[in-house]
Length: 202
Image (cartoon, rainbow, N blue to C red; front, side, top):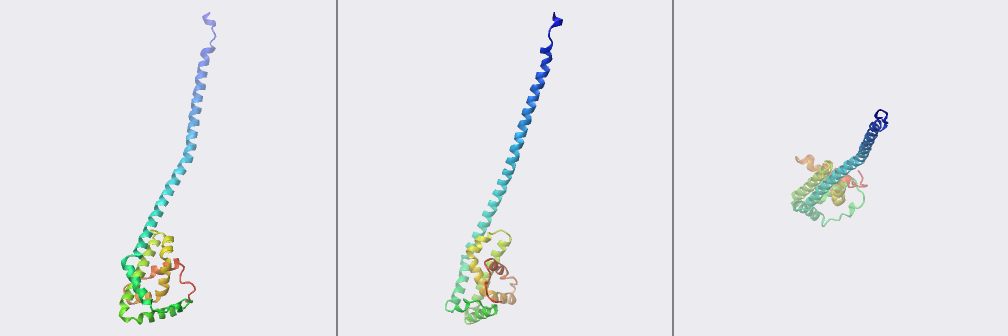
């Protein structure tokens, strides 16, 4: 009797084990696939956020550096220099400069106004060089990508442009008559950023 027993239940066990193993493999493959899919989404987002954070931090640094440059524009030394030049023109009719003028005309006009105050000539020259050197520093900060260009042009661009357009000739003389061989070069570039000297004739 025992020899005639049906062996099927015993033969079915390996088949059940195989099915179970196959199911486990499929679950693992599904988990791996899902994990890979999540990683494909999360990694680019993480990298994107890291880059965005870096750029935001860099922009904050450039803005802070620009703010420091603007603070220097209002410090005592530059303010005193601007006051010297303000007093230079306080009693001068400058309406003649409202129309576009040749560079040579502007230079001669400025020379005449300065020559009329020989007792203040040294202070005037020092004020021009001081302000030009300040704007040279501003332009260097922009070129080295340490300062925010837009903020500096918006805040002090008009003054820098007008200053250069008025005193360009005096700065040429300063370079020729002293060891300040590059004074005003950065200012010239900064003035261009702020719109240049407009329609003034060459």
